[in-house]
Length: 285
View 1 (tube, rainbow, N blue to C red):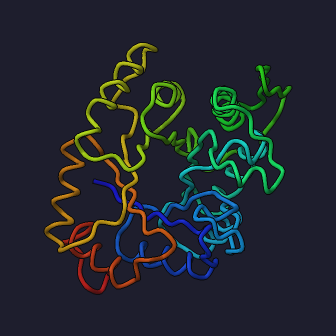
View 2 (cartoon, helix red, strand yellow):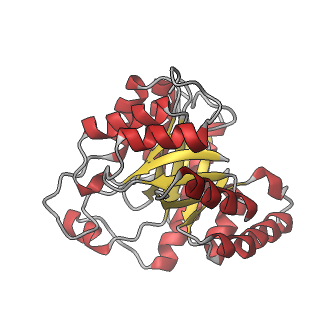
């Protein structure tokens, strides 16, 4: 099982607090540090500080050494397709090739209203998500790229520098495993991420992913299957049992969500010793 630490900084987390957790996760053997991409509290406290996801990840890229960095997920309503492609390629260079991009259709109505961000109906947002995925991949992997869709059009565009990672940084499509999400993941994504499923809910969704991949001639084994879940409480044995249940359900990666830093460095270190990398010595943790 692969492990990522997930945080929700829109609930008042400073850059310094995020850096401390990223460094703790890196020391504890976590593969990745991910954060949400929101500009407004989801709990109704609109005065809470909410840092920009990609500005923070650019900083973390220079202050960490080995841990991977990404968003789960960036809403396509916030940035034009070419803009997010350029931002992620830049941070990938800054990190030495450690960036991953989660993309979603966007969902928090008040956030869009407060900041004057257009918020199309859900069907249109999914259409825009599909076009964004195609454009981002094209800009990352082709010398020049032209695209004419229903919502976006670019002409003979060169996105340089290209990302450090080849063929491109991992692309994650996240959601609840609904048909549109699964279809987009099968066509474009490196990884399908499920939001807070119980283990028993995973196999039917993953079976649909397999079917969607085979329908377009893609090997289903090329799609990573993951889930974001709340930080597991309890003893190390209980934590390991939960992880094992998700692994048995067909997942290969877990994002452990600690919210706005409700789990401290000591808990992250303990989880690393007991579950993430039990064979490592105290000195490496």
